[in-house]
Image: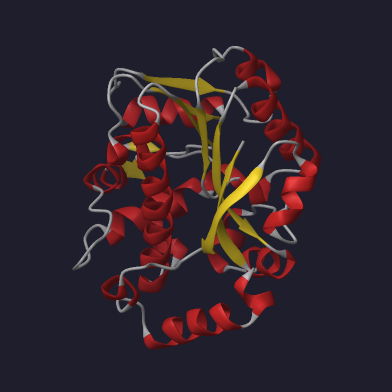
Length: 272
């Protein structure tokens, strides 16, 4: 068993890992993430303290599924691309997406998180582990340029200081010739909602970055243009939406129709 010694923002990776593992055991699972389920079984951590609800498992799985789908679309259009999976935590996206040999995939997170990944998951050809804070410019300077580049960040940007995040995105769009950036975002109301979530509070994590509107980021990062926006926990599949409890379905219905609520959490896809 792997003993966990993570705190604050780093500890939040266990929330998303556990959600994906548990959702994969539910009927009509959309992720079927056996790798996450196996990892949870090897971790010495009291997951019961999270008091995770079924709706939360489903919502986080649907969020991951959308980002996975965008990654697959990008890879299909650019079979010799670079993928930067920022704040990868213990997420098994590279196994779920299963990129072909021509893709250079980088998993980036704090050194202690990467060390934990090494102990839980086998090495994969074409996948490089980078132990560094994502906002440290040194690791990014070592990534070869010249290829279309996809940046994927799930459950990460809300914990970064705005100046550091904007500098990271400006560096990416300047260094690589073309690509996409896909991530989840929260407006100010959404950030407050996340900060008061019992699971986030249990870790002591501090939320920092909110996005007023998807278009606002275009003015802050030259070359970045919005391609797609959608609700953070939505699905185009009516069967998946029906898995939510009635209160959760009612909340999502309301978020679709009241703009400030709709911007609480979104999945955004930009190209550059």
